[in-house]
Amino acid sequence: MTRRSHLRPFLRTELDILFVALNAPVQSHDNRHWFSGDQSRFFCLLGRSGLTIDEVPRQTADEIVFGSVERNYKRASFGVVDLVPDLVETKSSEVRPTLDHAKTLLNVIRGHTPRFVCVIHAKVRYALNKSGLLVKTMVHGANGPLLKGCRAEFFMNYFPNGNNKPDALKIEVFKQLRDRL
Image (tube, helix red, strand yellow):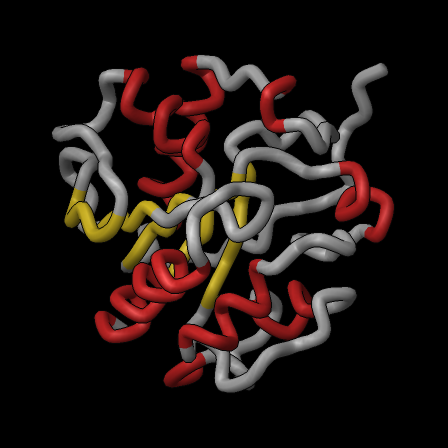
């Protein structure tokens, strides 16, 4: 049975960084907080990279990191959205992004004009690359601007948990992003 997510994006115009995830997993949906599942390491990696001034408790970290600037590096403003916002599913293999999902996300990016967009899931990268709407193919790391007529610079990072990529690679991308703030 498909459930609609309780998670609402943290969006404001001219964010410093907009993080783009795939969809809401069951635990985060049930907790009503982004990246709050027992296995989620997103906020831990933000702290270890210096994007936040310290680690924040994942149970309510979204309110702290996305809802304010107090604990963010240089008081930067961060936001978050999902590529597939209307699906609750923990297994990413079950998530099927469409061209409409990609178009909608890119319109959100254009409309909110973040300085940086950080994609944190390979399926998001794949969907955006497949859409044909980027000026060049997104790869891991810093990509520069990818949308015609949009100044947002894109970064691609590995998903924070559940894969065989070492933390050092993920932290390095977040550090590169931090150093650009």
